[in-house]
Image (cartoon, rainbow, N blue to C red; front, side, top):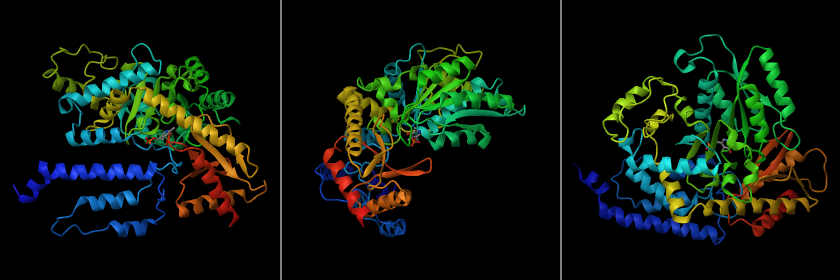
Length: 496
Ligand SMILES: *Cc1c(COP(=O)(O)O)cnc(C)c1O
């Protein structure tokens, strides 16, 4: 044992530092919510930022970590500031961040039940709750994984295994088959990436254009499907979006579900952002039909106020959640867990594939991760402390705010609204009275200037050949004052 190690684990030193850190967090939060005149985005270029934090770590360390933490907060993108209206990342709920810290400290990796007993059941409880709220009946089930990107891959791997027609997981691509997935043009890039990871290349991704309301065009979907089948490409799935990344649009999911059931295709809905509407009385209608999907992905770190990462992957048929990694090695996990599970005796699974959900408590059977974080814990704590009402309030407030902003844009001749927002994402651009060419450069420059200025943070997106400015209202404290301030700032920089 060394002195240094002893100090590093000393409970009393930790207690003192811990209080300090909580104070730093509370001060930061207050500063943000009081709209203190701080920059939302620091606007410091990467190399300069690098120098600010670079050290050789070789000294004898008696540093107070508070200084470094303060420097981090000073140079962060301030999600909790109402002037942050940029990406789809939530200003994490303070309590959820604490629960996350607690989970980090317990560090119960939960690859198998033994390594995270409480963590394992919290995940199950959270998933069961969500499944019910989504309106899925029967044996729907799922898992929590690290992010929407991984979640979409997890679901598509299951789709592949179930729909491919042979045991692809075991035999690989033996038949020179060509597989593909029909994907909305507005889908997140990670869907395209997941398909390429599966080895199907760019041809495996059949992009289906959206129509003027930014939803998958159903006629083209049909045409693309026929074309692919005529070319000898086996289409296995359709990926729809509930809250698309560029515009926040929801596909017409019950139509997609009809199409998929007519053609024996897997329907996956990427609801990473917009799935939370299911919790809201007011906006539940947006996710109509989603309960018919074979798989659904929902990020808790977007519209559920949880710190990153935590993503639910839900399967309408819970048994399919075991198909992602259809490996005989699953017996290995069962062998392991037999000894510790008194409730379930031997596995009743001989068939393997449809083997039921025995062993649900060994999470690594169904996730890409082996060790993973205690992701269910923070959601459970939020639910226990505030009830699910908190989530519906959050959805209602942020979606309503976005509509308010869209109304302001609509009434303003200098701005143009791309489309009525479905959720809390709004695309618009500055037209400054004219609708001529040069608008792309103008809007792109406006965004650069906003970044330099730092008092508001927004993003931009390409829609067709046009560049639009884009806001996402993730902060429930963002309101009229910020919207007016933002528009004023845009006028200012556009004038220069
Ligand atoms: C954010 C998002 C993703 C990616 O999820 P991560 O958690 O960032 O990996 C995928 N799809 C949609 C629709 C999203 O909004």
